[in-house]
Amino acid sequence: REAWAKRLAEASAAAKPKPAPDPAAKADSGADDADAEPKPEPEPAVDDGDARDASPAPVDDWNPKPFEVGDRVAARHPRVLNVNTGSILIVRGKRHLVQFDRIELGVEPVRDINIAHLPHHLDALLLEEEEKEREAAAAAA
Image 1: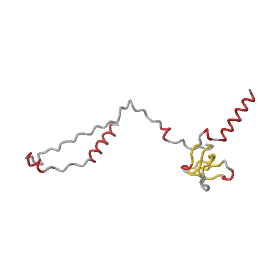
Image 2: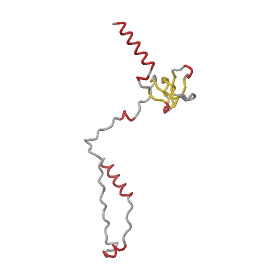
Image 3: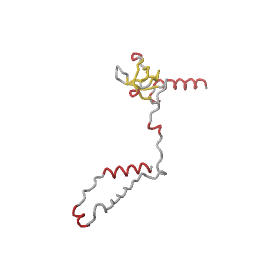
């Protein structure tokens, strides 16, 4: 933090335009340029907050979870250009092979920027599976 504050102070000091010297002030002082020492500019106060007050933000909120084989996703189909649900079959760099739930859409490679994790409450297949499990548990009890 101290290094950051120092760099910020140096950058803001360098960004400020220096005023042109006043010729009348030089004539009044009678000082010579060789004798005059440059006055250091006061560093601006940087309030970066108290380290104890700052709570580190969790990194998990910033970075999306990487895709894995079998993940349920919402993906934009490359030919039809609409968003449909599907499953990741192969993870390969920036393109992933997605099997779409609608049979007519088939299996297509989709860029990772066109894929999002499907929220659990919106996934119809998972909801159906959970409902079957609940019914089986109720029947067994």
